Image (cartoon, rainbow over all chains, first blue to last red; front, side):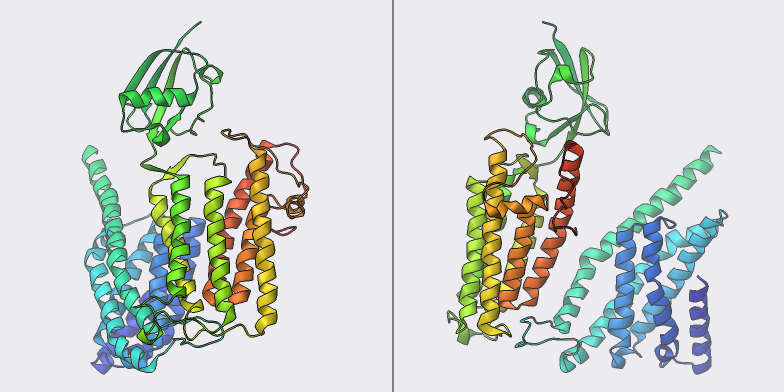
Length: 205
Length: 308
């Protein structure tokens, strides 16, 4: 979680210096890209089992992060100063600091209750807010994508295939509808199991 | 003759669901399932899983009561497998779809391509050839389902039909869209490429059919016996010397041929996904063969000779 703290500090410092969020993305982008790509390691952690999250959940999470960082914000310059970008960056930063503190302290077998509480309660607000940030960003990018036809392959071509990035983005936005509730309710169920279970034990004591 | 008593408990709740007395010692699990259905008609035999241990493996329909490690009062645990659908139904539905869907694109039915192309015909020979090959392939599959295959399981879970049909129908539409598109580009190396690809396709279709026939002849009608398959007089079956599942090998070959013939990326992707799935199945089958038969030929690989 230290890398996210680095990111958070950089973001706060920048904001205090410049008094505006414009140009924020530009200054933190290298750090962001480096760390977010590093997040691929998350999947390995799940696979070898040092982290209890399922590989599929982690996979969806990491893919959407990599998608947002590389395929949207990095590639579509006009939207880099949108407020929605700041929105999801802030959400990701807070989420990751909480999550990594939780994992680190758990591994060390010394977990302050506050960290556990934060990990299983912050998401209730953070998740929907983050989704709003991501969706607004993609939505803002749509006109530019349509105009430039970027990342698209058109017919005719000798491999007889086509790909329209604009429609791909529309489908991606639509896929949030089935995927987000599943992840959200998964976390709610985990929360009930962990926090609710904890309460029962204390009562017996 | 000593009779058995059989009690059937729910595997999750341990609730007593059924008690059968005076069961014959040589009764099979299939017969016991039929008796259970009488008291619980919503659980027809195909959706019953009976086991000796709540978390253990399902007992087979052919298992005989007195041969099982049970006392004179046998306890079985029941799990509901969910709504079932017959393999034949699933196969017929998932294969009829692509056959029909591809033709919609081939005949350029309205609302697929621009209106000026409605019901027009492609000027490329390879497009007509591709339609014949694709249609032949699925007609062959439908006929094999009706007349050739002998299924060891009668049914599969109902949700599989939705999953399978999405896969087959989806890919068929995606491939057909590009092959029959007015802006389709014929293969780079022209007639040479098409002829070679067609040869590969035809050989692999014949091969695949030969293997299906050979497998059918291994198993008498109505039985569920399993034997090691061996090469027959038909040269296409000689691939059994090198692989456990030559039907899958030939199937992959057919689709590679079709991909080369049409030079179309979606076809290549379909072949790749199919290859991945068939490799998983072949490895599973290969492992079962090795477990069941001590004298299984050591030279054989699951799907690709010497490699995989």
